[in-house]
Length: 232
View 1 (cartoon, rainbow, N blue to C red):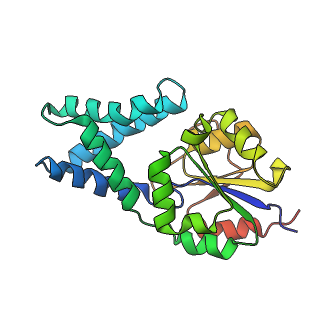
View 2: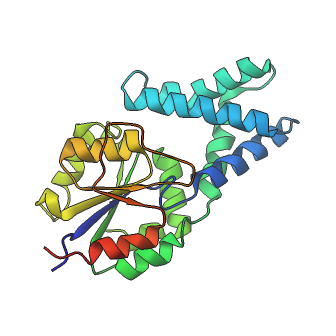
View 3: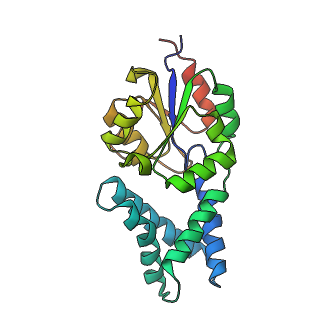
């Protein structure tokens, strides 16, 4: 018998290549306002955006403050004063919801696992964006459920998020649920705090300098098959 009956999948950066979507959406928005995104601007936005999401995870800001705040900070840093932040943000979100790329052939991986294990999405993304992206990508069709922080009212890594997820899945033995995600501070920290076995999807060039110890570490999603072969 396989050690795990259930998988909690992160979306952005795990099942889907979020960097690809983000870069394409940001470039599209800057073109709309008559500007071009340089690599320097992209890196600046990545840094600002990441800091806002980290603050959200820590409970320092709300999702509403994050959505516009990251662009306000970006435009201030670039000295841009003639762009409507709200319109820019809405177009950016539209781009994120319509532009996607799979990570490691993730859709086929999930299709192969369909019926063999229960699969659920666990994401901090904006509901409207995630729902459309998951639908367009076909991932929604192979999942047994979708857990989105905006609907739950608390983001990963907070225990309340995972308490909600655990209360709404068939498997009640936490040791038989595997959380797969790329973020140490969101996915792995959250899983460890909730008592769920974790699998860190480590991207090339990243390292774990934290005190967090995921149960597994993979560099390709296909390696999940090997983990699921483990028997109790």
